[in-house]
Amino acid sequence: MRYFLLSASLLLLITNYALSQKKASQFLIKANIAHFTDSLVYLNYGTLGASATDTAVVKNGSFTFKGHVDEPVPAMIFSKTFKVRIDLFIENMPVTVVGDADSFYNTKVTGKGAVQEFELFNQRLMDNRKSTIALFEKAYKLKQSGDSITAKQIQAQADSQYNWEFKARLQYVTDHPASYIAARELLAYTSTNTLAKSISLFNTLDASIKGSNVGKEIAARIDLLSKVEEGRPAQDFTQHTPEGKPVQLSSYKGRYVLVEFWASWCGPCRAENPNLLKQYQLYNKKGFDILSVSLDSNKELWLKAVEKDALPWTHVSDLKGWSNAVAVLYGIRAVPASFLIDPAGTIVATGLRGETLNKKLETIFSK
Image 1 (tube, helix red, strand yellow):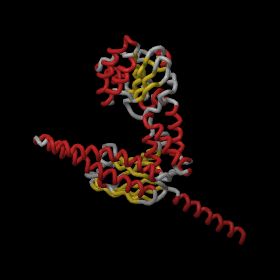
Image 2 (tube, rainbow, N blue to C red; image 1 turned 30 degrees about the vertical axis):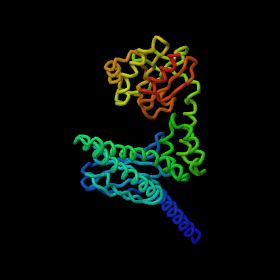
Image 3 (cartoon, rainbow, N blue to C red; image 1 turned 135 degrees about the vertical axis):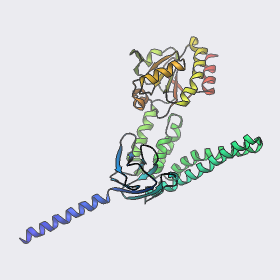
Image 4 (cartoon, rainbow, N blue to C red; image 1 turned 60 degrees about the horizontal axis):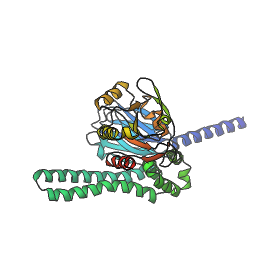
């Protein structure tokens, strides 16, 4: 009997310990947002490849989220109406959120570790943005009033502050090699145009970060982008036209081809289309083609944009949006994006548009 009681007591102790450990390995977000009338609110957290979305019921502006993450990750609390949108970092610890739906930029998020680190870093960025916006508005008003000289000076100051954020984010990576926040900044920074710098920064990261999920994600992205950088053979692909005809990139060998990633909903893409059309008309008969890969998911909107912008070259898509197979193959995370491929099938330039595209084509075809 004594043995049974001892075993039962030991089992209870182990169970309580396991429960306490489980509780300790969870994040717990308690929030109160004044003037928030929506009945539901959502929490999205994790990475692009493995994100989760939880739902909570709102009662008198209060709601709670709890769960588990393997490491500190970015998160966003939002409502369908977007009356509330709060960016934060979470890890397995308590987090408190206090704010006002009428002014959610002033929301206060408190916690420890990565939670606090992100808030301090993000506050610096937000303060700079507010100041920059105020300067832009001041410059605009001065210009409207006729004081163009002072407006130009204020505009220069605003431009300087605007560019500061980019430098600050990059400097944060350099200064915090063991930070998950810094690692996320590096992941966002890594692109075809920043590959060499990204590799250099990745090599300075702490071993614990390199071995983390975000570290592995950065390494995978660097590996992917290394395959589509200038000087590398373009990766072949096949995708279909609106009529269902398969088009293979390698069929363009012998000519220069600009692989242009775009979408009907992308304003900068649509703004660039007149210039693409002009360059196509100038150089098509000299050996230049364009192959547009659309990240649309709606075929009707895609075709309407092609027709409205009067784009005569070949268009392909699998209508899977950001999951477009060619976009994934080429590491596309923003549009417009482009790759200029020479007659031998080698990538000779990336990210060309506007005057940079015009000059590149002029150099090629004036020889």
